[in-house]
Amino acid sequence: MRQWMNIAKEAIARASIVVKFICLLHVTDSYLLSSSHVLGPSMLPTLNTTGDVVLVEHLSHRIGKLGSGDLVLVRSPLDPKKSITKRIIAMEGDKVTFSARNHSFRSLVVPKGHVWIQGDNLYVSRDSREFGPIPYGLVQGKVFFRVWPPKGFGSLGQ
Amino acid sequence: MGTPSVLWSIAKKSFTVGLVTVTVSDRFASIVPVRGASMSPTFNPKTNTSLGSLSDDYVLVEKFCLRNYKFSHGDVIVFCSPNDHKEKHVKRIVGLPGDWVGTRYDVVKIPEGHCWVEGDSSSSSKDSRSFGPVPLGLVNGRATHILWPPHRVGSIDRKVAQNRVSSS
Image 1 (cartoon, chains in turn green, brown):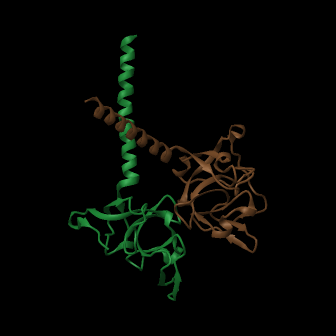
Image 2 (spheres, rainbow over the protein chains, first blue to last red):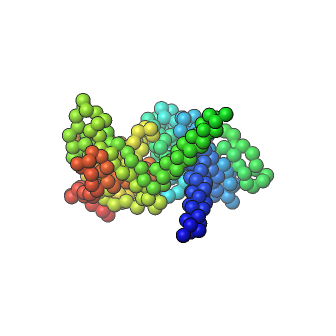
């Protein structure tokens, strides 16, 4: 009987360590730093088509330190299960001029609480030119460092 | 000699508790107070401004719906306001992607990945009628149960407004 008690105690201790570790992972992953795999041609020439591994930090969008020119990871407004990587072109209150699908130029003021995002490769990117300014709440983090491929290792500037 | 180690162990304990709380509230469920009368009579049926936070309803918000973003008409959701990411709203889903929703002046088609939310008390609610369809990515969870005050504890039922929505 006592033996079983000891085994159960030890099992609970082990399990609680695992649970704590998972919780720590979750908190770092969603509040500090995570890695992300970026695929697709929409951010050429900054990021490659074949898939770059980048580091994303989740602090600066919470304290409102994002500005235009920053690369951000955004939950896609068209499909909430997907995340997309784009560049912020304008913050709320800024005026943007862009060419719409039918090659006419339009300009508008980004409304309150929204940001305007575009890909660096204007020809293939699906971005704010298609679905308009996106709510700031969809921003998940700022992409600031490239880990893979090795020759592109380094911070991603403005 | 004993004090620093006691402090250290208290700090360690509270750190662990914090980690676990944040994880549970992000991944599984959290408890959220509902302010204002926009969801009356489902929440806060009689708001008394002088009583304030004492009479607020507290609801249980589950996060499992965020795994695949499957919602149905009539679900009560918590989401970030599209105009201010620091604000959270509690509203009811009226329309899902592909639906046509009638507003006061015209009929709107809800784009892909968006939903149309409205408060139950249509007179005093700031919802999709003022800011348009909301991206599903802003959704934070689905309210399932009322936990406080004690005499109103119970699950929140799904109410579907008739004749408002037609799916294409």
